[in-house]
Length: 448
Image 1: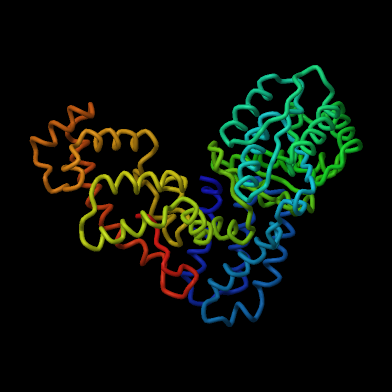
Image 2: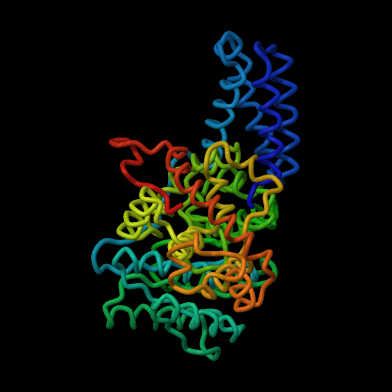
């Protein structure tokens, strides 16, 4: 998961701080020295780290903290606030013109950053908001990129405009805008060519498009896994082309997080979205405050609620809740529950967003896509009666189910045991989320 190493180190530093009843100035300075090392190891820009530590130190080494009843908590609060400031404080949206006025977005970035997939994700989000997007294939150097855009456009049910590889990108862009105007499309997203590195030809091509097409926003897509290099790439594009915002991809991978913490401070440009996976739905709005909470191990309940609300069928959730109360939950409901979890990004992602749950995941054998498929095979090998009444599962039935699913009986026994544990967990988690009438959560409950 993104920031895992940085998050672990920071949580250990703060755990030591919270363990002390009273803090001295040397305690705070020693802790901030460790924070500095952790940030540098996460590939955050040295200049940014220096400014960040100075800002935190100025506030933390003061009477307000030293005389506080909970000085350790006060230091964490200051670190959290300064981290939010570092990443931009406020959430920045894509600029989309109202009504049928055409918005033209030029996306750019190096090859391999995930630009082509990312713009399909954006198109899907805009379509869901009632917009009529058009994806435009301006990468004339890689026929595979044009094909990939067409495939992704088809999956998102968004049209793709392409003229092959024999036309100049600027002419393709102009023709696409004309096509959009004639066909009632109001957002044109240009997929420009990526290179292995920033070069003069690439920049000239982008400048030519910008000079001949009325671009609304210029968006840079960068790979978060490249760390400080991503920040250097952003600086180059800002200097030579000018950028309005950044999208960070691959934040679900083994990334050190330096790019997310440095880009805004170095370029002055906001992060708009973060890519959290390969699926076309895996693109999240970037919220600096929520990201700071994730990094500091405080969870991210608001994003979790939003994911759940978009993934959960409310009527199905109510029916599951009714069955849970009456102890009628069966394996068909368990399948439904797993389906909802898949839509929300997986159990590990969900639990990591819950305050206090991150450390409890250490070493836990959480199910992946492959093991979920095996579970489905076992459940589908049961009769409808067995699925609705788990208590029927005696040893001979379990043996038959194991043969039908092509698994060992131990896996069937494990599933039955996990099913019982999941039933208990389903009862407990809504309470852990702090759901209450009238609060932010209202009557909303997660599907497990």
